[in-house]
Length: 276
Image (cartoon, one colour):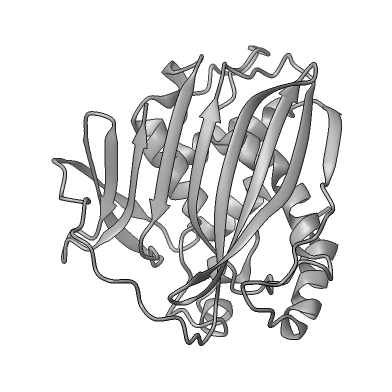
């Protein structure tokens, strides 16, 4: 039930203007004995491009990104507390790094934990890092570190430009992203941030129209890379470079462990990542 948390976050957002050196909450939301809903998992997998075995097959290997979805209500619980210093409204996911030690499956009972690890200044505001763990029988099997940016005026000097490491990779195809993608992903993930839903709600938060969820673009790229084949140890790192406006067309490119999403008209980089 994320709607009350979203409402609480929206109400508290105007009250949060903390600097990057503000204290972080000590709370560590957790849930134990969690079982995956196979129908919900399949709906997520279909939308993101992961394979589904079809009706009648109960056993599933979880996509590399799916524990993030399972733990999202815990992250929301943390980010909507009074103690969390950044406003929920307009918060933008800027990166995620995932370390999977072995495959997780729908046959297992999971324990999920989330905590905030740090705040840091950013040239466009303040960035928070949230760490998520998925445990089985007390052992951490899957860990992620996500950064979220609260945009605001800042006196922080822009970082010295560095040579880009994101040289264009060979294009492998184009994807057309529909106008309602944000609403569809919100339905399967629970992430209904207004910046993803409608042009009007996105414009109220500084975007020209709704933008795609970063975690959809990341999942779609990892699905294309065949991340479900890496059903044992896997490591993924994704940086969200620029918003993907909806509707739009993006170019998917990859070479070796690296992948990208780019604007086919301008070549502007939306996302870069690796899967190893």
